[in-house]
Length: 182
Image 1 (cartoon, rainbow, N blue to C red):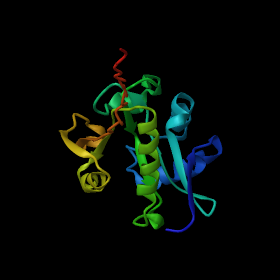
Image 2: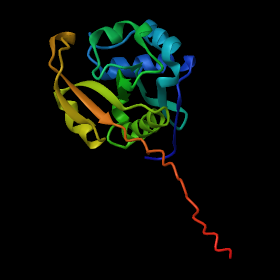
Image 3: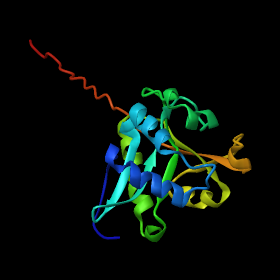
């Protein structure tokens, strides 16, 4: 992996994002340009792309919620985003086919995780197909079981990456003095 940048998505990235989505996801699963625009309007702070030499090679996005699992209605209704929620979702993590296996997915997920931690989230949640379980496990996600999702008639699985926040240490000191005056 050579020079790359992970940054917040911009509206002018949408054509690339839609192209990558259609290339990586089954037709019934893929979000439309209109859905991406709605998501962007509701939770643009949670929409990242990765660029290599000026070309968008991948993206990740997802709303914030208090739910411990990703639910099908979340994909359809961006207004369910709750900026104060405990969990960062992953709706899509896609890398162009010619750029897979080169560390781009890990790089963008490292940034996504770093931001979720800074925002004080309890974890990151994803609903994925069985073949993606080993990938997410390498990133620190734990399998939570089979999902109730019936998207495209496929079997889906819930996974979560717990985020350990540093405890805030409160330091106290007591100064003991003795007054030995005669």
